[in-house]
Image 1: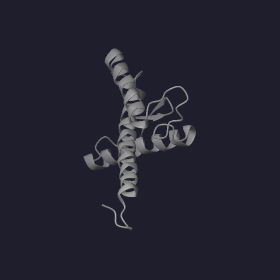
Image 2 (image 1 turned 135 degrees about the vertical axis):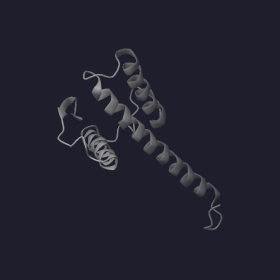
Image 3 (image 1 turned 90 degrees about the vertical axis):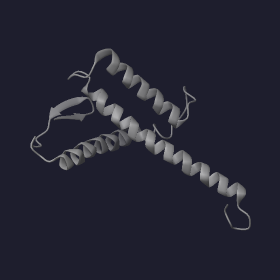
Length: 122
């Protein structure tokens, strides 16, 4: 088991005989911790891009990052040197899910404001 801490890989101490549910929870917690630490460091740049150079919306920008990570895996494979790429890829997939849900919510809110007839949303 490998842990990622901003590019530094360390071995964890979970027991290899742990049941699958515990392993899944552990891995998901690792990704959650990684995303929260990066969000603290970088702000909400993935789901709310500042669009200085790139004018892509959040979904498209995250998909571009996913493409970059897949390209790196395709070119270099998965090994100790690229393990962080796997963590980043999983993180970007989670962020894509969040960005898509945020976009749907914003779209529904906009539509309900446009269609609202005397307080009744359609």
